[in-house]
Amino acid sequence: MKRIVFLLLLMMTALILCSCAAPQEVPPVQSTPAPAAPASLFPQDHPLGRAAADVLSPYDACLQHVAAQGVPSISHRIPQDMFTQLIASAQAQNITAAGGRYAFTSVQTGTHTYQATAMEATQDLDPFATPAPGDETPMDSTKMGDYSVTGGGIYHRTHLWDVKEDLSQGSIEIITTLNGESAGYETFAFSNRSDGFYFVDASPDFTVSLDTLQTGSTYLVAAGRFTQSRVEVVEYHVQNLHEAPDPASMDFDAVRNSVDRVSYLNATIDQVTYE
Image 1 (cartoon, rainbow, N blue to C red):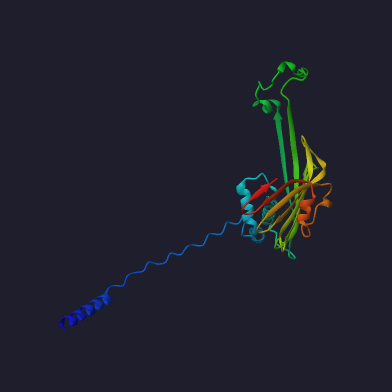
Image 2: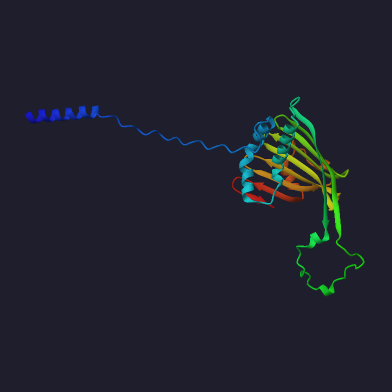
């Protein structure tokens, strides 16, 4: 009996000591920080910058995969480049939306000239590159000295911007002249539809001859469709601008399957093909 009482006293003493012991601190649960959002490609201090990010960010994963693969394609960057120029021009001219649209004109003007001599053009060439010098036609001995050529002049680049405030639709025209002569023309139209972002870019083919540019008989068209799972751009030629499709109503699959392709980009987040 005494032994039982003694054991009960020991158990009570142990319980009292445990209850009086200092509580152990439980280490705080380490929360995993949320992944940082990718930096926007556009300035967020302007309404157009925020609108551009909203329009193109759903397709960023596929576009980044194209860049990571290093494919020789630049057509998929056209919308980003056009929006970047638009935002910069609107900021520089302090343009605000009117009637739900940004409609304005910006002009860049500059004078650029150059001079190149024959000696400068050939100084880095291999003097022993000719396989059989004795079989070549002799140079004209009546023209001696170091020939030189000058070029360049005054260029004007005019942008005609006409886009909706939220960048859901719009068009851009770029007209370039050199010394008063046509040196470039480009049209870009886009539409942010319910099933994706569509765009069409068209510019005439030019041939270069010193300081003159001659317009070819065809236009190069880049038609694109961006969705969250796929980025596609097809390039092809048309005879005139009226043959370029309207991005607001374009059947991209029909265009892709009916034209004589110059190139075709098909990119997902897992695979990129370019032909």
